[in-house]
Image (cartoon, rainbow, N blue to C red; front, side, top):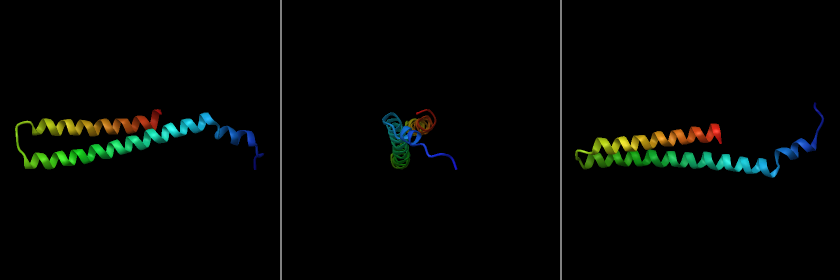
Length: 82
């Protein structure tokens, strides 16, 4: 067993480290909430396009799909780079 060094343990819980962990946790949670929001919005858009038909339904569904893609990119960015 290695020697117990209180300096290294305190280093993990320094203010800068805690701030970085808080920012990373906040960005991942926010990204997940945004992704859930975009999926729910996409499902609602699908229901609306089934009910109300017009010539722009495909465009609206494409925009909703791009929003889901943006949510996934944001989540991956938050996990890997923040």
